[in-house]
Image 1 (cartoon, one colour):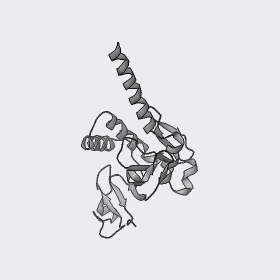
Image 2: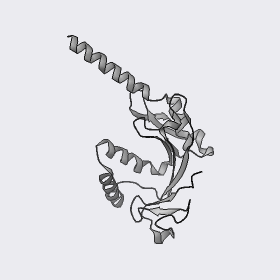
Image 3: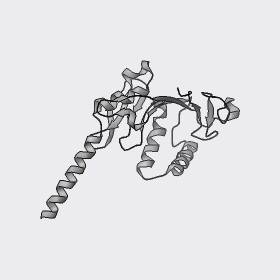
Image 4: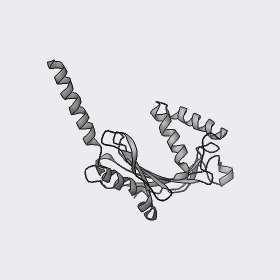
Length: 195
């Protein structure tokens, strides 16, 4: 009986500790929107986590932008926003990751489903904004983040270097280039020089 009581207290303490690591909904929304263009912030939908760690919609949107808060279990600080045409691609990736699939299996599954038409991919391109910072530069209690870095990705499924005129790597700081050319995950990388 004593062992059961001790285990219960330990379990409760672990749950409370985990729950305290997840910022409030307000902080999650505030930080997720840091990646959004100013004119899209007010109407963007925001995904995040409940106090028990469940993935959920924290705020419904009224425009075409979807933002994702920082993963409390992740390393460093990273939030992102993307055009809603990429939602089927993103959601499928989340589903496969939840099933325990690794990077290559997720890539191969989405590639196959994209080719067959089962997975709807952005037709005209879809922009992703990613804002990152070192873990020590993020305060989850206040939502303050310093020394952030914003980069951009434009998904253009099946595009190639030949179809876009883009090189396969950047030859100068901030120069756009194409990654994963010819695949469902083809995208233009735009990485501005860091200050």
